[in-house]
View 1 (cartoon, rainbow, N blue to C red):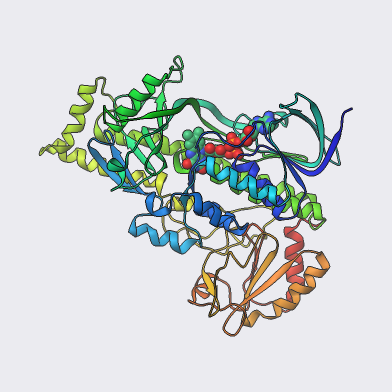
View 2: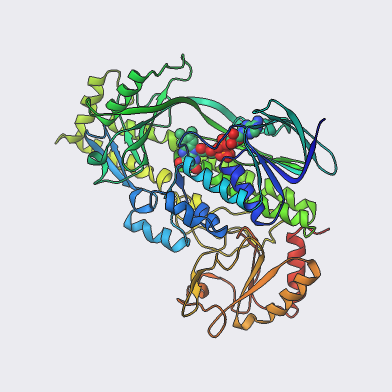
Length: 582
Ligand code: FDA
């Protein structure tokens, strides 16, 4: 007979979005089932740049060490080379992902965690393993077919691809984390802006010992300008490190308007040797695939009890490395809200803040990634190769940059300017850490603070409600903690100083009244936590007697600049608002 399984949350997909949703929900004690179509996780390396916001989230749920153990470290990520081929001439380099000494401090100051490089083939198993260990029921070879929803829940038809049997899962909420071709998003008719398949890319994975070519300029990305480099694709030819220095992935563009190219082994080897610039390179091709570049985002991310996260709601090229990162961050935004509503701590309206907070991010990253891909045009123009029709013409144009002529000098200046623009792809720290939320789950006291530097390149710490909690190191004589460590996703956290100690009793009382955990952290000498470097005082923007209320996802819900006459009333009001309590 048709056996029905019950759970609180059913997650479709075990990619970065789905597996992290499962991990976050299980960490919060929410019963969940994760189904995924295939018998295992991602089978190609795909996403790899893992930014600081993602790393601090993984730190929060206790898996940062496991990720770092499998990752290529920050130090080896950033000597990004632009060249005619890897063994050939260099056109220039950009120190990327915060590895430039002038930028490194910005990154170290902003977060307890540094970025790293971990291919999806390594990250997904860590997420799935930890989710499953903490309670997720993980079902491989299980395909989502359809769903219906009513006032109390969602009924989902699934196919066991192993046995061919269909069955029904009943959940209170459904999370569609089923990627760029999301059926869940289709089934709830999410409104989409933009287009899919605007350019063609082919991936070639291969093994080859390239230490001699790259070991002295370690990077995860080597960009190659050759005839054909500006056709389709992600801006230029890319040779990407998967594991240093013998596992690699090439991304090469093709014209999506024409016939899809057939890439047999001989053709793959030819492309690899061309881009590497070594006609005799010993290479073993391990896989090839074609994929489309997209520029599409949803303007609503949910319908009733069904939510979509990850590529299901933002589809874009890998430029800026934002895909998997944003997917994990979507799930982090959604998980605590579902947990709070299921526990009865929050009104159902809290769930609507998911779209309010994450749809603007989806739009921003889709536009940013596509703009970055297009900004290779400036480099092609600067080199003078945009209009070149033959390889000889291209080489002649590029040679001109060496000439002791006015044209040569102009070209050198243009190349420098074009390379500078690439910081918006490779050092966009503000894009990565500066997400700001405006919604009913934030008690606003004004717009985000005015940026003092370029808002895409530079992150600016702020405690204006809606901002991500600024990181500084605090602690005691034997321990050092990030402010993020003191505000785990299992609670609300109230930061104050010694003059604000009365907030402690207020928080305890409000906790009991509203049934929500609010932990007070008093930072000051002689207290549990000391402002070791006086950095907290410098960054908190509030008076010592004021308070900052931090949500489980470490965005600031509310702040009081000073201690009011009745802190309990002020805090209760703020928390009830943020939790959308009716
Ligand atoms: P994802 O596509 O990963 O997962 C979808 C899941 O849903 C899969 O588990 C699948 O099995 C499952 N599924 C689908 N349909 C189903 C159904 N009907 N029933 C059950 N399960 C179903 N991003 C980044 O942040 N940094 C980077 O450096 C890069 N680089 C990069 C390079 C290349 C070459 C590519 C192609 C992509 C990137 N990305 C990236 C993007 C990144 O890969 C992408 O954004 C994430 O994988 C999205 O994660 P999701 O979990 O949303 O979808």
